[in-house]
Length: 125
Length: 286
Image 1 (tube, rainbow over the protein chains, first blue to last red):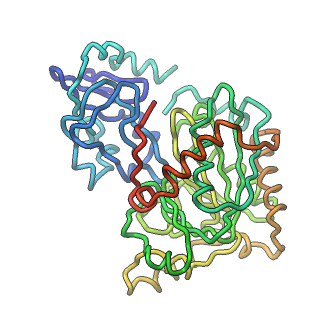
Image 2: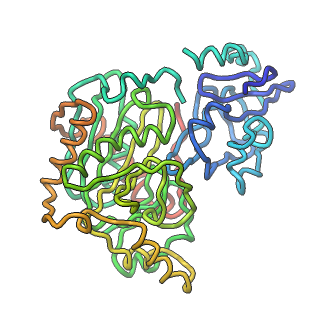
């Protein structure tokens, strides 16, 4: 449920790191709590994001919630499949439901994220 | 989205007394500006949980945060003198003409983590209020929300129905760990007027009207009693008091809320860019 090769934030966002870039999305736990996602207000490519700061909103059956970036940087790629099929986030949050790829300003901030064991322990607190 | 909520504590939310904000009848733009001002000024460690009750001084259409521009007949709204405001909360279009509206502002940490459960938890108070009116309600589960331009044409999990017909609409927004839930207690529906304000295929208007009338109900349809708005406010407050064992203190808006209200009124809710297109330039901040 929480892949070992990902890092996790306390805001329930996962990050898959590849060099100085990382792909991010929301965790299985987050999508389960939100229910069916009906709209993702995706950011523009090139827009800047800051760690622990909201960078987009999503709507799940009448509830609007912020998504927080786990790192500082700029949006390199956006998953445009979510424009038409936002429920990919529910169906496959770690693969087809990825949200954005970020070019990181400072990969050292990744140290503040949790591995899968720590995230599962965090959920059980 | 938070693991520490305890069902054993259900029904009790610490931090008494709560704040009751009755702002009376205001226009659509002021109503939404106040709600967002209270939400974004809320500091969980020092702000009381707030129940706001209000009405609308002019017939108004409120639309969901991400509702599409082309779902609304803007020309019809203008011709009929209907104000249109985009809510900060999700969902679809609502006509505010004969109703009592509530907003409930509470830290996310005080609610069940599941979004639907949080609606159901808050709506226990409204269920109590309807019961005081002699109207039994149910909270449907596993309803499939279909995208429609009008709120009362579909029912979501956590909303309330009476004999299968939707009687309470609600929607939420969550910012920085604080939840704002809107809800509409409709005294009398005007589906013909409402459906004339949204864009529906011409051949679907009659079908939509039938669907609306078969799927939605209102207080006046469910009780023969004359509804006095002040009595209804007392009933809603009692519903929250009963459901959450809460005591309320009547209050006014605070200085920082009024300052934020003025920024939002002129910078956001009175602007076409926000109401028609959902664009707002304030930088998102933590």
